[in-house]
Image 1: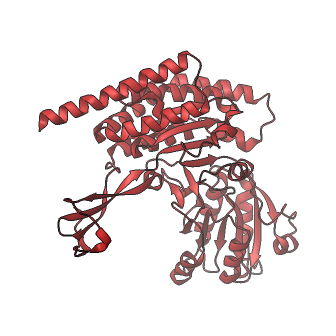
Image 2: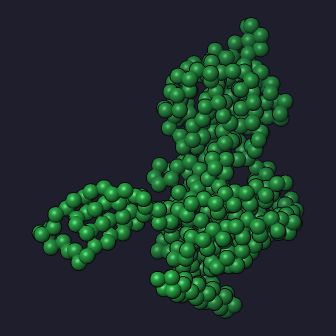
Image 3: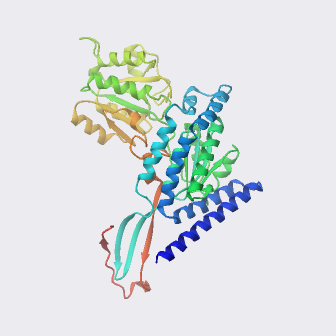
Length: 460
C-alpha cells in the first residue's frame, strides 16, 4: 500500500514537471496568449489539487520566507513605482495604496504563515448520507477552479491573494495596475520561484502584464470561474458590464458610524477618529458619521458632536454636512449623500432616532461596513440585527473589516454580494462543493428494487 502511494505521488510530481516544461516552452516561443495562460492555469490548479496538502502548506511557508528574504529588493522596486507615479495624474488615495509601508512585508508574511498553519480546506467532509444499502453519498469542499483578480495600484494585494489561492487549491491569474508594474513583477517572481521550489507548477499563479489583455480575459468564461476586482467603483462596474464570468466584490465603500444618544464620549472620539484617519483611502474607512439629535446640544457645555468635530479637525479631517447638519453647524454641503471621499474628509449628519439612522444607511450606504457607538446593549443589538450590511459593528472601528484582522490570514477582497461570499473573503469564500458517491453496482431502473434510506451519517 505504501509503495502504491509513493508511486502515485511520484507520478503526480512528474505530471507537474511536464506541465512546467510545457509552460516554459510556450513562453520561450512567445506564444502565451491570454487563452493559453488561462488554460495553463486551469491545468496547474488540477495538478495542485491532486498533490498532498503538505505540498501546498510547504509552498506557503516558502512564500512567506521568500517575501522576508527579498524585502529590500521588493521595497526598491516599489520605490521605482512611487517615483514614476509622481509624473502621473494619480489621486492621493491611489498613491496611498501604492506605497508598501514599513512593516507591511512582515505583516504579509505573518498572514501567509497563519494560512499555512490552518487546516487544509480541500476535501473537508460537510455531509454524509447513506442513500441506500451500501450506497453512500458525501459532500466535500473543493476549489472553485481559476480566479482572475484585477487590482489597481495595490501591490500588497498580490501576495495575499496568491497565498489564499494556493491554500484553497485554486489557479490564479493576476492583472495589476500599471502604477505598480515594478512591484507586481518582483512579487510575482518571488512567489513563482517559491511555489516551484515546493513542488507546485509556476503557472498556478500567472501575471498578466499588458492592458489590452483584460478584455480578452473577461471573455474566457470556459477557463475562468470567478473574477474579483480590487479597485475603483468605475473598474468594478466596467468588469461587471463586460463579462459572463461571475464577479465578486464591491463597487463602493461608503461606511457609516451612528453615534447613539447613549454613546460614551471617549469611545466616540477614539472610534470616529480611527475609522477616518487610520487609512483614509481604504474601503473600510468611515465616510459618514450620523449623530443622534440628543448628543448635539451645546446648552450645557460642548456636546459629543462638537467635541467629535474638534477631534477630527485636530487630525486634519475636513468636515462636510448633510442636509440637516450643514444648516445646523454651518458646514459646507457634502458632494452627495453617497460620496466616498477616500481621503481626510468626512460627512456629518444629524438624525432624530436609530430608525432614521438605519433608514439613512440603507438609502445611502454601500452595504460594506457600518457601526454603532452606544452603551445601551438593547440599542446595539437592534442595530446589529437590522442593518443589512456585510459587516456591522458595535463600539468598534470600521477599520476592523479586514481579512487579516478577522483572523482569515488574508483576503482576496471584501464582498457586498449576497450570493456565495459576503464581507472579507478568505479561504472559505474561494471554495465550492462536490458530491462523491460510492456504491456497489447500484442502478436506478426507475427506482424499482431499491429502498432509499437517506440516513445522515457522522462527518468525522
